[in-house]
Image 1 (tube, rainbow, N blue to C red):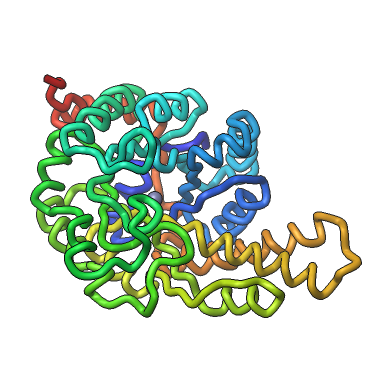
Image 2: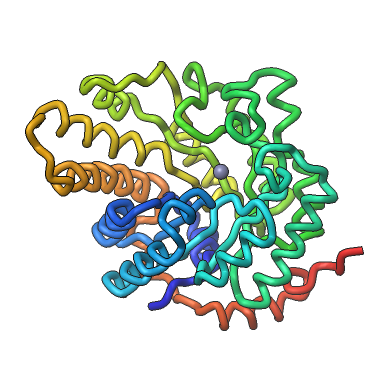
Length: 351
Ligand SMILES: [Zn+2]
């Protein structure tokens, strides 16, 4: 089957009460790791590429690697998603490359750093929704700012400083009405990268209650958790054991993600855990077999190690076993779907 719009996967996940991991990719081994994990667990798949990944791979390599995944895994529904589009232009170029889903992150200005105004966010997101839905492509928006990388405030904010950046549930309701997005990324205290929390997170720093409140107001909007690697101790141990250095750090516990899935979270972004798994495996080969210089001998174990993480997440989030149960739709079919949903297909014209 061709790449499917992400909305098809999210709708199925919502109807059946599970979540989907969205794994980031930059090269062939990562795509293979995800696809082998999906094949083994019969999971539908969301593969995502950041702007940095598209630059690193060059769009053409990435596009052809994804076509290979589709060709080799005809029974697995796969969505290809632009992670953190910084402008409508980035989203439109992703659509030209065949991405079936785009994130317009208007919570930040085009520099990807400066928090924007609500009005700016609505304007750019609505522009992308109108163009994307006309082609049957799914759109994820973001409201509120993640900690860490996104606003430069560092991970594990506490008290008022953290709260200021969280998604406001009432505004979330307004934002979805104003833009017509299919999915909404929410800020609940997580951040990108390995250094999320200085200790095992409590409700003070990982504010899952915000998700519950947003889900009550927006039961039909798919919620997205960014920065949701769990940063397991055993992956850090391997890196440390073979000469790497990682400070003490904590991620988002799997049980908190599962709690989110009970309250409308359908897409969970996982990148750091896969990076840690690959790096540990490569370090181990370099340390234990110092004479080895065939890249296959360390990229192979790295791929295997990432696959293991993907399998674990697919099972934990509940997407395992669902690949064959999804009735795939093409982007063209989604165009008709949006036309029948007037409030989604035609959000109010920009003033
Ligand atoms: Zn993110």
